[in-house]
Length: 475
Image 1 (cartoon, rainbow, N blue to C red):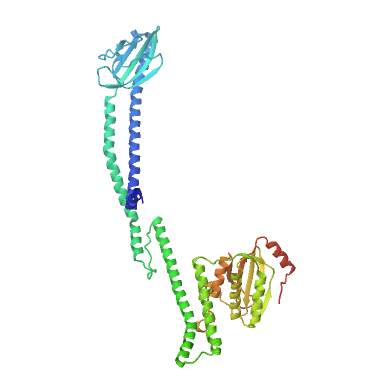
Image 2: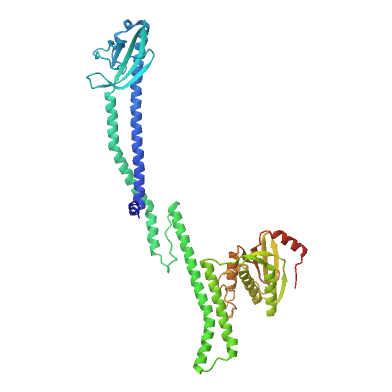
């Protein structure tokens, strides 16, 4: 870490904000003061040059008309803000001047007739007093003259200096006051942040129901507090879901483990061997049930951590549906009616087959007599609907059934399955950019709609296939 970064880290938001605001205010005030002094200086010069120019024009006009003889005492006397007047001939000698004015020219060099020249802070030789002088050339009977009118600048320059001194004294005071005000205002603005920080430090993993205080002002801190409360709410919901997940998993694993341990304890207590009938009837089914549950839990855990890892390839979805139909028919637990159209999708065949199996097993488990597997194409999406003629599912449970360990059985001990099948289907559908949802059934029971994007370019082929087999294939 560099020294600059270390110093910046030591300064808090309040100090940095105050420092930046103070520097900005100081820069603005200093620039404003400099501009004001420059404008004041220019305005004063304009006033002095305007008065001097008016006198030079008056005298030059008189000389042009009547020569030096036309000049009266009033033309050369001080007045109208003009303090000194000089008329210089073409040899550089003063031929007319205000009474008491020095005999040396204030400004060197001749000015052509009709031309103006302005001199700031002009002086007479040997005199410290400064003037603002306006010079105008004049001509009479081929004699050339330079008319000079000057205004004392000492008093005005003194007032400008006084203004600069006042600004030099006032600006640090104003800047210090601005820094103090910014420090207080920033501190007051950050006070809700301090309260939020204190409350956040008191919130622990076991007390996620607490919330940080939300200020009344609709500002960025209000947004920060609201966002933190939303985050805490999500964390609380996630923790509750995690606790339910752990509790449900423990409960579901306890049943097969209890059966296995009980039979093994019985064999140990009686010193008798476990017969093959017990293995086939109890031990092997319970061990298989526990293995399936552990596999399901591992799959969901991988989906939560990194998402499902899929092996994408073109799949004939109708072949998978036919295979699932044949499997259920071989079990003999329910009649199966299958209506398919040839559809090709892109995805992981094992995962999609697992999703179809979970949907079919769920339908068989709740069916009264018949399960339907139907397929259709909607634009660029392949749709598989698995339906049963069982008791159905209420609309209020349409989202809950896809949660983990979510089952609609009122008594857990009489429920079949661990309640993970539909949750796995939902994860597989999401990984393939599809979805699964409960839809209204025309068979009286529940209907699950499972969708997958079709392979690009398949939609036109599908449309033709559906047209040629409008009734589908029923077998």
